Amino acid sequence: MQDPIPMRYPTLDIRGSICALATPFAPDGALDLPAFARLLDHQLAGGTQALVVAGSTGEAHMLEHDEFDRLLSFAVEHVAGRVPVVAGTGEAGTAKTVAATRRAKALGADAALVVTPYYVRPTQEGMRRHFLEVAEHGGLPVVLYNVPSRTACDLLPETVAQLAGHPAIVGIKEARADAGRIAALAELARPDFVYLSGDDGTAGQAMLAGAAGTVSVVANLVPRAFRALCDAATAGDRAAAARCDDALAPLVQALNCAPNPIAVKAGLPELGLGSALPRLPLVELAEGADRARLREALSSLASLAHAA
Image 1 (spheres, rainbow, N blue to C red):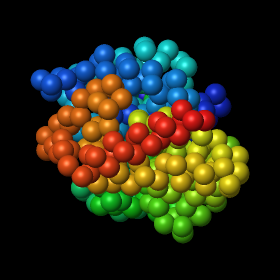
Image 2: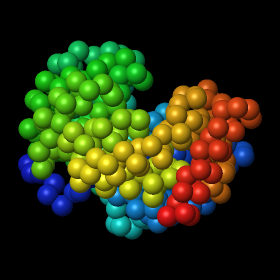
Image 3: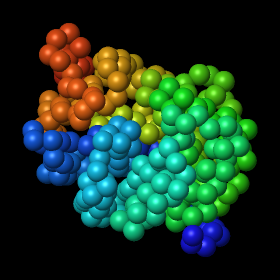
C-alpha cells in the first residue's frame, strides 16, 4: 500500500455540466476510438466541464482491462487538460477498486468516480471502510457514487458526512432523486466537498437546492443545452432553469424507455457520434415508437438551438 494522501486537491474543479460518457463500439464489437474522439469533441464544443470515462453509462463492466486502459488513456490524451477526466473505478470488492483506481492514476485520470459496492450489499460500516481504503491507497481524489437502483445498497447521508472529512474524498454523485435526499446532501456541501446530482430528471431541482453540478447521461447528446441548464440552476436563476428543464424534458423522458445506456446509445448515430450497439447482455434499442420518440426529441432540441 502506498502512503495515505495528506492533502485536499485545491486545483481540482469538478462541478457544473459533467458528462457520463457512453463508449462507442464498432460493428465488430471493438472499441471505436474515432467515434469516441468525435464524442469527446462534441462535449468540449458544447461546454461540458468534466468528463466521466468508463462509468456505468460507459459500460465499464463490459470492458476488458486493456480496453479500460486504452479508452482512458485516449481520453486523457485527446482532452489534453482542457477539462478534468474522471475514471469510473468502482468494483464490488475493495482491493479490486483500489487496484483500478491506481491504474486510472497511472493512465492520467484527474479523479475517480467510485460506485458503492454492488451486489454484495455491504453495511454502512462496510461502505465507510471501503471508501476510506480507496481514498487512502488509490492515489486519486475520490468522488463517491450512490445509485441504489443499480447496486442494491444505499450510502446514507450520515455515512457520507463521516467520509466527507477525508482529504481525498472530494464529493458525491447522488442518483436518488427524492426531495429528502437532495436536501440532506445539499447540507453536506462545502467548497472542498461537492454534491453532484446523478439524475437528469431532477438535476435542475438538485442544483437549485445546492448541488454544484450534475453527472449527466443526456449530455452525451445535447451538451450545450445541458450546460445551459447547469449554468442557470447553479446561479439560482429559477426561471431560466425551468425553461431549460422544459426544453430537455422530452429527451430525458425518451431516454427512460430502456435501461441506461441502451437509449442514449441509440441517439449516437443520429448525431454521427458512433453506433447504437451496446455489449451483451444489453441489446440495441429496437426500431419502433421509442426510437421514433427519441429522434423527435433530438430534432426538437436541434430546432430550438438553431432558433436561438
